[in-house]
Length: 350
Image (tube, rainbow, N blue to C red; front, top):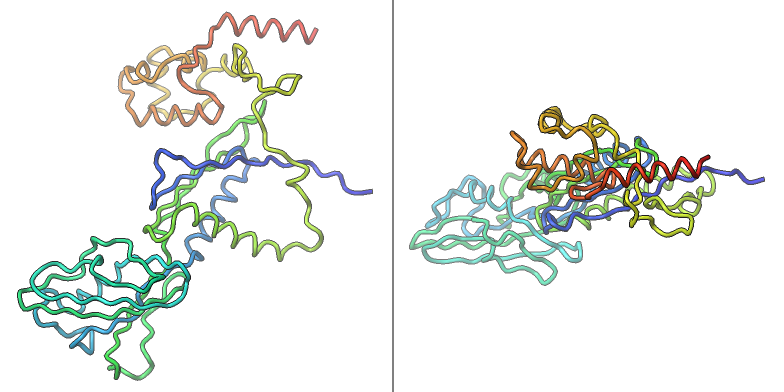
């Protein structure tokens, strides 16, 4: 007889569209099984920071220079300073193959990344990044060698050769296009349960890859590695589980038109202490006479901001915590309707 496994909560994923850009993304996964927020958040963060591939300049040939301690006539910066600026070039590689780039600039002016000519499969992202400043007699000619990889790669100088016959200068390369990853675990509600997790994952990149692609890559790496830990046929939790919905009526339709918007009546009558606001936000609300959940959700944003010492940071905190319980400001819930709903529930139970 086959084992009858209990289903798992399947999370719903969404990206915060208001703050999304080519360099920043905020992924919200909720609800999650208790404890899964930190488990998934930490695993994804570690994999993303260590394993996402990128491209970088690994070597250059500067015309008239055979080592990093030389100077170039007509260039304000010394060669070492120029090489440090070259490490800041952000490259988008559409194929992952090695490539070359070339820069040639003469005359007085500022040399920027946008002046670089690239192979067809390469693209420079930060075009305004400054490489050097040229004087009137300045002449800067650089050939770049681009490679792909993971993490950090020290300069690959050939062993025992201080100067190269082809005048190539090797650079340290930071391939990872991800600048920072952070995650926050909040509380989420599923039906009558209040112990579920909400994972907010914030991804910062250098623009060579989108935050969405970063999450896709990291998830693929994790899944590939974990598959080898399976000792037998995988348990089909996706088939026996389903994404939770808002409380449903007997007909199976969402009960969001009722007085409680499909949420438990008891939730609105709970003290705001159970929402676990920060001390500052909690004290401000209590001082303004907001003691129950219903008192808070019936207020508008403007009314909340008028509370003494209650700023926008506290407002954001309140909105995020209310969202975890499928609540929001301005719900206009009438207490008489709550009492009637509670009476109807008691009659049905009896």
